[in-house]
Image 1: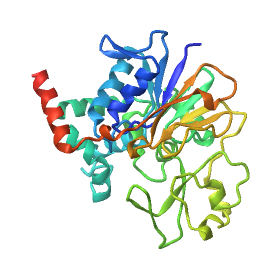
Image 2: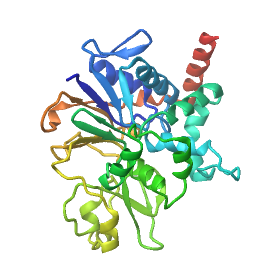
Image 3: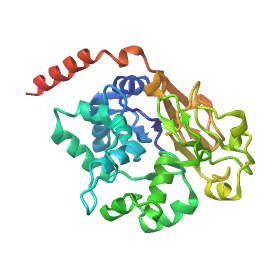
Length: 333
């Protein structure tokens, strides 16, 4: 089989992405990053938002897909961008333009302010990306592969891509389309008790917490908690209700190997289980941009992780970034 290099959430860390590709032996030739032995990158989504070089990262990733040297699944941030710029039959955006959503996407909007046609082209490209991939003996999804959702979805949409009708319906809570997108791009989560909120490490106040989907017979909230931010001891010891158990998903040890991102892991990359690996190690929070070099091994091996630590110079002062963007634009003109 050909080798695959699966890369976690980039979030605009464009220079770090290039360093990681170089570290793995890729070279920029013929307008795209290529590996001399024909290896192929698979991105788990979330190229946009938050980081300083979103536009650069998107151009690099898009060029690789066009050249056939990479594949990619849709992340929740690409989906959110589509919903932000799409209006329903009443003329309202599918993703409300409220302060919270504006804060998330603002960095992307700022970096494409001088390139509106480019941004529209990228939005059209996002529409063509699949929500999941099944490649040879492994699977890739941004957040969660839930068989109860994926089996009927793939039976109807074998390429795992959203049609225009599917996309519009996916913004309607309670619909099958909504559940597919929610599971694939946002994973599973549980709501905190009424009136209880938590301020996460990225400054957002949340009324829910992210959960794992690989714990057999979990009993408490702490058993399924999967995010950098802890809950209070009282909440972590809280018993799961039958309704909560029913909502949670479970990915069994005997299923195909699965790679995903989304979950803001910290520390050194590790294998969750012999068939499960998360690749999101908080790159945009000065963490690590992580790749797993897959070569058909029967069990995933922590020794196959490669990463680059995100350095402070990835985030230069805004005046330096503006100067870079202006110089690049003038060079193209």
